[in-house]
Length: 159
Ligand code: COA
Image (tube, rainbow, N blue to C red; front, side, top):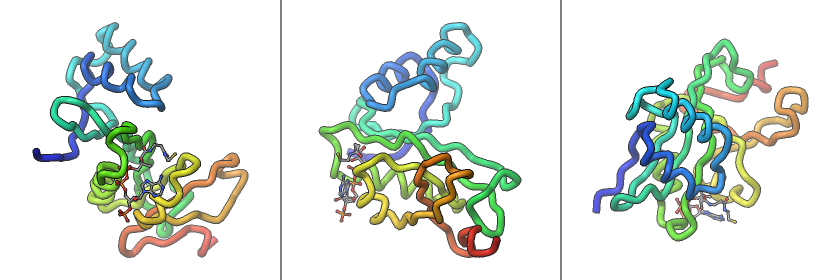
């Protein structure tokens, strides 16, 4: 079976699949509301990417591109991807789906920032993500991890 990452469409089927993920929340509920109220078109692109195993969505992540003007992490300031809601359903963990999604995110060639969940640190180490210097004011107690493509460094080394 071919396993590939695809951009997820906003429709009732996708939103039903999302309910199986632990990090189902406000973002998904508002997508559902917008769809029901015809405020978004059926099958329009969502910020989510996922992997189907047969016809079942087994892994997903959300990617959002942040403009360089708002970058506080990278040097030189750069458009970057905020990666969140990376999650693989329990029965499908440890089979390479999580790394396949992260490699897909890296393939855009932009720096990536994520706020990892507790207990997933080893996974992010293996994916080549590093901590940024702790800055309470900037990160409000979060502990972001970043990945740098060729030619991009941490902003803190220069400020
Ligand atoms: N602890 C330690 N290593 C882990 C790990 C974990 N929780 N999850 C994955 N890894 C390692 C794998 O062993 C693998 O190493 P290898 O390349 O040397 O074989 C590498 O990271 C890639 O693993 P992969 O199969 O792509 O991971 P995945 O598809 O399971 O995705 C998560 C990783 C964390 C996104 C996924 O497991 C998930 O959503 N988990 C649920 C939430 C969570 O954080 N759980 C942590 C355990 S409680």
